[in-house]
Picture 1: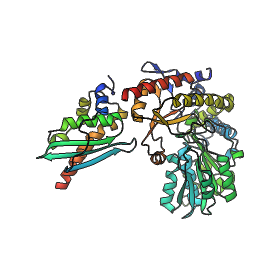
Picture 2: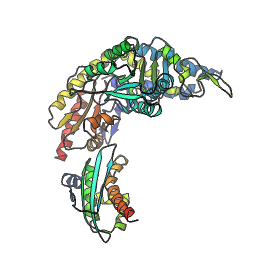
Picture 3: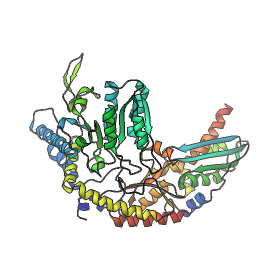
Picture 4: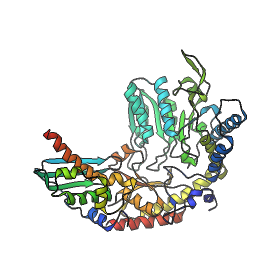
Length: 125
Length: 404
């Protein structure tokens, strides 16, 4: 099974949690400048638990599908849990091996969500 | 096709599919004769050049200098000492920018570039801008992807313009610029002309004497030679007048604790041990090309260009970034496929043994101008075939279907 498995293409064509949240406490965006993948995320936290998450983005199927899959996964999880997620976890979620050349695409979503949550943390401090 | 047999890598397979190598603008494949020359050097002749008096050094030096003569003949330079070996076109452009920056350029002098330049012909100038306050001006690309010659004339008439540094051909658009006309305008206005021939060198004959450019650079690896070697051609009087840049062994005549005097050309600009095997390989690659002749190369590439453009013009989901007009055009095709990111296409083509490049091809400002984050590029060479184009197009159609 390759990285363009039906699951990935499905999330790319019809991304879940696509859009924005008005009045979200956390808004953050990241990009891979070398290839033009862009992701922005809105997160609503209630007592450090993600109560809503929405994203918008453009770019390759891997970057967009990975973000869509991640938003489904992190919904209802705690900030601490999400900040501890590593690439291996993402790879399992995607269900397909990610080659070195596509690592940056796959990991952009996780980076966007984690950096968004870290920024909020910084503000509190 | 007999000539294709000279390139061993093209016989290989990837995931059981015959390799289709469509990434020749990134780097070309190497003929056996070049691979053998490099191996032979390390097996039988390896030693340093221009240094010790011993039989091995003598052979190495002789072969290294024979390659210089091969380059001189290949681009029809007047003298051997106008050929400086570099590590590539990037190194050559950095060298010229730096010696001009040290030797002749002053604050507010204007350097003219085109909007489609490779990063290697933008960043050294941006660095000079930071260091000494030169200014940059860019020639626009018109809707037909060609340079705006009217604008070129207006810009080059500005008395502040000291240098025009421009690509012979675009590694994204595939266009060949009318450099002879541009150089003529430079002559009239006393402007130093620098030609970046990295994208064109494998496709079209270069004659520096008839072009009458002041400098010209290219990379060896884009003309079937090893990576890490390139050429800077410069007119002898200019090279003599300009100061050295890199310091080290080979570039000096005399050194004391207090000072140094520089060596004669071309060694003045060749500090440190060069890529000797690479230079010898470059010489061999040029001889290989000469034996085949540019007439043959042009003929083959014209067939491929026509065929490719015709094939993709039938696909309404492809947007070509470059002219459909085959005049002054190389077999370099950048395009986007509606609904599919170029990285996804390149990845999927790769699984089918088709080697392309996706990205901005080190030409980000042009992509920004065209509002494209990235494109897919198929860049062909004389050793490619129309059958390969057929397979490529078939696969592109399949991939597009996956995504809609």
